[in-house]
Amino acid sequence: MKIFERDRHKVIWGDAIKVLSSEIEDESIDLVFADPPYNIGKDFNGRRDKWESKESYLNWCYKWLALCISKLKPGGSLYVMTATQNMPYFDIYLRKRMTILSRIVWFYDSSGVQARKYYGSLYEPILFCVKDKNNYTFNADDIMVEARTGAVRKLIDYRKPVPKVYNSKKVPGNVWNIPRVRYRMEEYEEHPTQKPVALLNRIVTASSHPGDMVLDPFSGTFTTSDVAKKLDRMSIGIEIEEEYVKIGLRRLEICSEYEGQPLEKKGRTFESARDEQQAMLNFSEV
Image 1: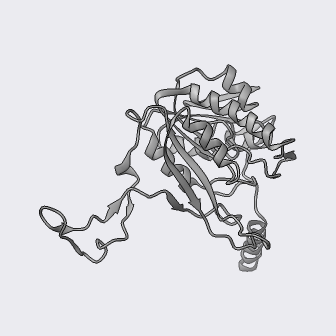
Image 2: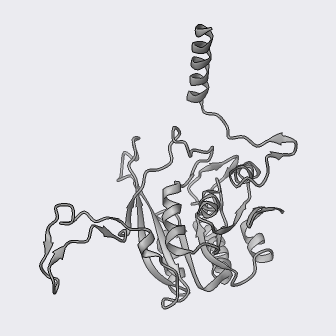
Image 3: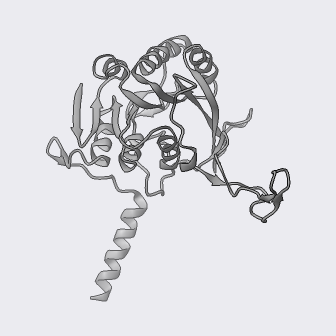
């Protein structure tokens, strides 16, 4: 286990359960966002996302879920993701220990073929849970979206005591149409399940205040921590893979180099081709 820290942000290289057990104080966290391996065979830098059985995977999940709950403050919130086939088990486990306020569908389009013999998945489920349904953070005014109602056409709502134009803003519903991170996007990092900044921006904005502590026990590309920093929150990011830890150190500007090597974002193929074209153009202008 290694801990890197700077300006109220921690990157911890280690196993999530061990770190949660030994390094994070109980009732010290305002918001947890957990995006664990889904047990579907993804390759995380050589570490295969596959357990011996569904039961062994779920037992592992119940351990870190219990720890996350214990780390939350009394008014804290938990957002957790998993594969569609696993979410019913998460739901049953968590509803006995927390209040599930929303069951969110993160919907996205896909340019590729999803399946040939059944309906392929175009969404990932997210549970929004709180420890105390009468005491939790939800900054509704900060996450408003356009209301696709009569407000756009300036229609009048005559159901009001005093008729007035429909509201033009509303709190998002529980179906979120946010594009996945793709290779050509500026925010892309070399990781198979990177979550978009827009997704984390909504969650962190809604369920925490400036100065609050945000924890991500499976940080991956450290998008949660990066968003927390930009929104003036504190953060703790845990990650077991060293290559992804380097991403966190770079994104959070904790280190400029690692073991004597500069921490730089890896270039993409189209960027190198573009650089070559620009170099040729510059040469021809001389």
